[in-house]
Length: 345
Image (cartoon, rainbow, N blue to C red; front, top):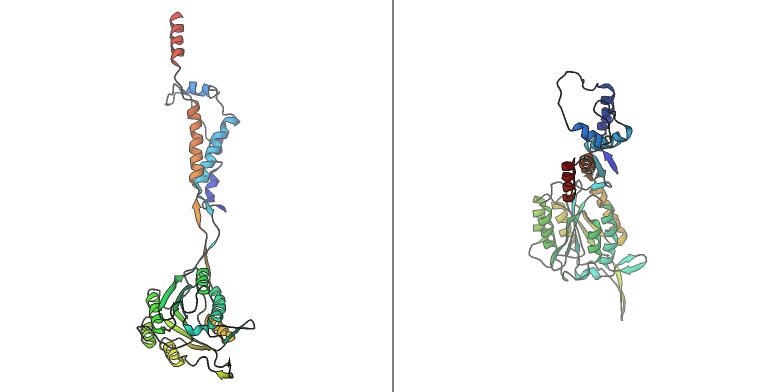
């Protein structure tokens, strides 16, 4: 959209007309004046009259008036305003750490009426959660035997969601390095502004790998002002069928709830237990309430200055009278003819 930042300058549009109408021309008497001997010739070339008789016609005023209009438009600072762009600099820095160890392939979750593994249930819930975190910087850590930063903190929620959906069980190893995942999150969150550092960790087991224990990493997180929300995922009971019959087992027997609770408590966060996809969805909805997204949106419209277009056009148009009145030298043959004619005369 085109907009003038200083539109009040256009008030000066009738100024030349007012000057022409109300200001008297210079006296032709004995007053001192600047003598311009070539003015008569210049006026005649423009099709005008002598200095004493010349009265500007309407056609001759069109070009000067148009140049004056262009100069005023350039001075009024025309700008082109682009589409509104959201400023996303007031949200939280939220890192998500997701367990990809071998135990995440346990089919103890029900999604849309069918049994699915734990990672598939996690992806389904996290897709909606990521979409709701508009205005937050989101990061993604995937961990198994090793912990990897899959996505650094970014406003690009679509990329975070895509990389989460492309993750697979065991791609980081089959063990569980919870402490290393926490340490990696601390490394990247500690550089962000205080009071906005949040880590959401989801796992279905206990720490079985890594170089740092979960509680040591949680202690460092507390010192850095990072709040940890821990989620323990997995059903507490499922029927296991075999050739010898069926039996009820606890698929979450390896889940270390005590350590997860201590980790969250050290940092001022909370521990949640998700036994099914409904509870997992409620937990992420609750996290939206505990760490709400900033409600006030700041928008700005990118602008591009356009003053140089009318200014450049005014400059080009002002050269037209000068170009039309240039005395071009005659061709060599014509100069000789002129000399002969003068000599004959």
